[in-house]
Length: 357
Image 1 (cartoon, rainbow, N blue to C red):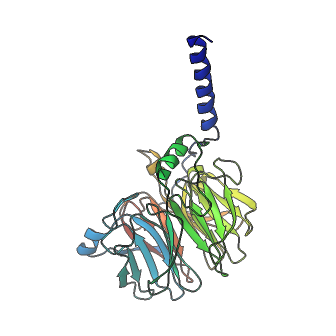
Image 2 (tube, rainbow, N blue to C red):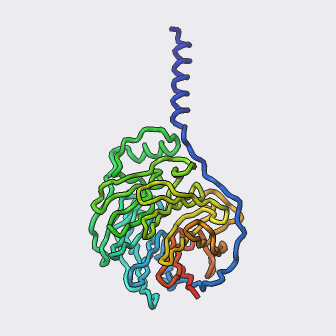
Image 3 (cartoon, helix red, strand yellow):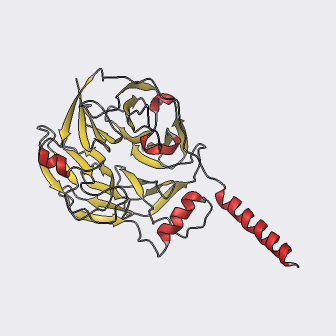
């Protein structure tokens, strides 16, 4: 065979391989901007933290927010760190606010995290957090003592393999189901089992029993029902139904407790969901972070949306900005038993309350 024929044959093989590796890619979905509502009709906004100059100087990108059984508010932020940071953050990253006075009662987490992300408090007031640089899920007791760590360490070259797979979806990455790749959030069931949204490098949600043994996973990149393009926030209701903020697909997806697909909510009013929470009133609370982190430069939006369990929008409010009541990339949301809403804002680096009137 001539050198030319060998070259052509090799080129065809390489081209075919690249085409195959690129198959299954999924583009970010953009939707028409919904009409904004300037002010909430039934909520009064207030910035809870940071308030002092000292706290403002130490506050970092807001990541997560949750409420425990006593009504205390837990706020997770990156302090001097950043998304995908490589160094352990020296300052406290978890701020605990008294549920009655809204005053800071505790701060902890220094030296534990590199890139804080998801935050969940279970029915026993255990605190669960994800770190997207350490690729781990951590479970702490209510006093902040580490109980257990979930997630295996990366093998050599794993991060680069995952980065290549982000561009070439079929690129082989040899990892097992117990290895997280930038996990974003977690929801914990009453029986202690939990579901992780493993979203930046993986494209899955995975359920584990209370001991951390895998029960099932949904793991396919795409925009079809049951597929994901950055599962970013996750929550569950008393029936075990699971709600996922499928961020780059600009929708909420719903699954039953066994991982079977139930529904998807992708109407324009929902925008681009970053965080989702089931309230004790049975309503679904969502924060729309908008398109700022997906390259948008103008007509930026952020909002809060309240839905029923059928996905019907009941109320929505919020405008882009830094004033009280305004929002800049709300990253997570929590609701207490009184219906008060708490929002962690990434760009405004704060936690804001929307008090139910």
